[in-house]
Length: 342
Image (cartoon, rainbow, N blue to C red; front, side, top):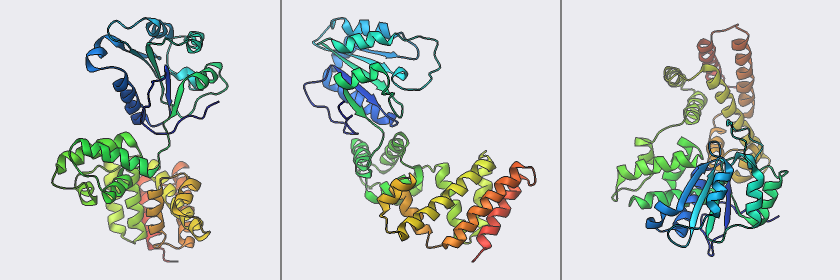
């Protein structure tokens, strides 16, 4: 079985008769589909020789029949199978019974003048299935899930360049801190910042602060930061803002506890000699989130972090057993942790 290629978006020629794209980065899958289509068809040919079938809505045999039909105009055609859930263990909400054996037969002898592009935007393939084994032998398989920070920066830099703007490292780090490593959202934010900056001003940390969006996780990070800096009034103000934005208090509590745990774990592994990237792998977060967490470890000792985690668990129990009002319990938690000094 050939190992799937990672998130390298370049397409080499000659083109493969079948491509299988899977993974959690849907933005990358869409980019890869566009790159393959651009390499295969001219703009004029697409009206006649490009077809797309959603596998949750269309029978597989229709798509395979299309793939086996010669191009109407030009030398090649592209047939796209989207949401190929039958390659995974996912349970799709569809009434269509897909005859996967048709794809198995096609994969043995694919049409020479068709590029069949199969997109499965799911975390993993079910390698116990015969069709998956067949495609891994005959198709060009790309896994589009995990991105290094360098690759992520390069993709977003390219987005900015398309608008004539310049993307900077500190702007990148600020954007990751605000949005998280969600490529689709990041690309949208870079596009927004690029339109704002134009060709004269670089997309730096200040620009991201001025116009960038903030995820719920980022607001919770800021909330934890305010608590750890003993800025109790600011923390309570932000808490009330989040509640007014219809954020559920129990969800906020869970995210608070998660951030305290990340800070505690980051400090523990740093003391054990692990690097920033190694820590990120250990606790399953982006390296820049580890950098921010390590900055927060200077504000609280490990004893204070353990106390914060204990108080979060205690508050969760009080809310779920009806012993305390949800918002009041969160307010008391913030006051208790921010006042604790040892």
